[in-house]
Amino acid sequence: MAAQMKFGDYISGGLEVFKANVVPSVVAVLCMMIPFVNFLIGINYMAAVKAAKHEGKPIQIGDLFNFENAVDKIVGPFLVVFLMNIGSMILFVPGLIIGGLFVFVGPILADRPGTSFIDAMKASLHFAKGNLVPCILLSLVVGIVTFVGMMCCVGAFVTIPLGLGTAFLAYEDHKSAVQAAAAEGGVQL
Image 1 (cartoon, rainbow, N blue to C red):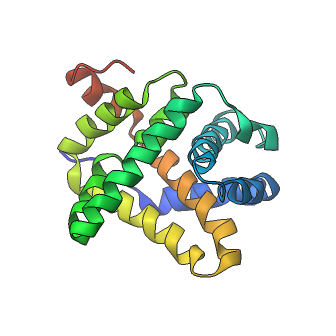
Image 2 (cartoon, helix red, strand yellow):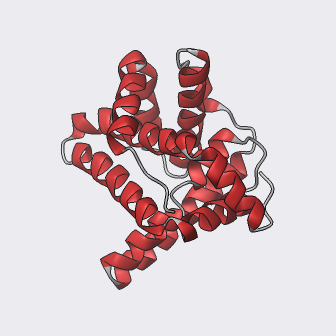
């Protein structure tokens, strides 16, 4: 049975985190304007969302600048975006499918420090193979949420953190299934 995604819950949860952490969220978006650093900041923001949701810890600006495992935090998301762009150049649908297959790469890297980007990609792929439609829809929802705000400069300061929070909260909701699918595929998280 395919995973059931509660998009409304994930979006409202991401919005709650944003409202409670406006300044660090805005700083994250500003820092994400720097090429390649944007991937690192995005993963670190998701890790801060995890801490905010589980520990009630407010996001600190310093949380965004965690350089541990920086290569994996940069290369993994870069490869996903690169593959999505290649797929989208061919036709929109292949890019969307690639986005769905690798939708949990960032959240896995945020949740499991020390996981290699290859293992995060494999784990996301193994989960998405059995849940392709929900994963594609999640990728589409996150993309739409993020893109709508980017249409107006000020909106990006809300929707980029909202998209990151939404993706992470969806992963959190399905973490045990992602780990089980990864283990079946021979990937230990």
